[in-house]
Length: 369
Image 1 (cartoon, rainbow, N blue to C red):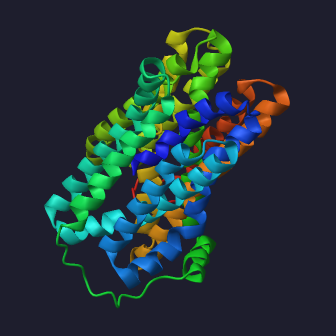
Image 2 (cartoon, rainbow, N blue to C red; image 1 turned 45 degrees about the vertical axis):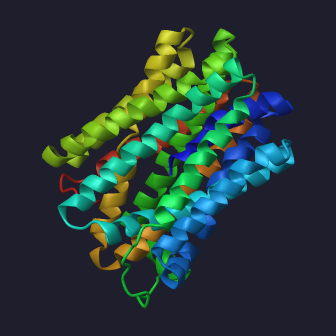
């Protein structure tokens, strides 16, 4: 699942390789996350027909095909196809993997298995810029990142393929598009859906923009600036780990307010930061603050409609398409003002939405006003 985050550092390298404008570069991550909007619900229908294991295997095969493209033909058009396949594969994977795990482990072990899975996902997220930078400096080809990830995907296909999985009856009713979209008439579901659009948009936006800030303001090379993305995901991982314990003991509303305050302050710092310490600090704080917002919005939506959790889950996964919207808007803004500060301004709209949501949150973790 973490392979989808390599698009951030890959976009920065491709921008230099193909001499792209900001808006053309912004189209690359958008082509990854667009498919969460298109394929989230159809994946549920597919999973009901071919099974969870086969759906995960299909997602991995599509991912392998995507990772092979840079070595078949490396140009802007083919890399757009790469992004599309990567997004489609990851959509199938994110929708089907957690249900598959629930077929393998149950009870108390399920929660710990899912948490450990998120930890492994984070390793892929923050290691991609490190591997790309090492490959660029040591082997003079950042694209060697792709065969490394491809080998891991092939290994996953083989190991899962030989693993026996006892799946539930496939006759379970699968929710349709209309079932999901009807839920947007509920204010709580709508607010949480927009919240997920914003938190994923912020996540992908920082992923793509962080290296550009170091390049623009400090004159760093992409190989050196790429570590900014790793710092973001490292602190996002730390935030997720600590959040699991904090949310179990304290009000989600209080933790939400602290997280949003961190994000707002850090985005403000990005406007004025002119040295690496402040830039790294701001990016780390955003990663820490944004670590648990997805979980907070997702859980509140599920708890608000306990009898429609399948539909709610499909709708919230569709919200990951926020990763397609914000990078594109940031690219247009940066081109218009010829500054990455314009991209930061677009990200500030996510923080403003998070602030507006504070009065909507009640102390009870399952309710919104």
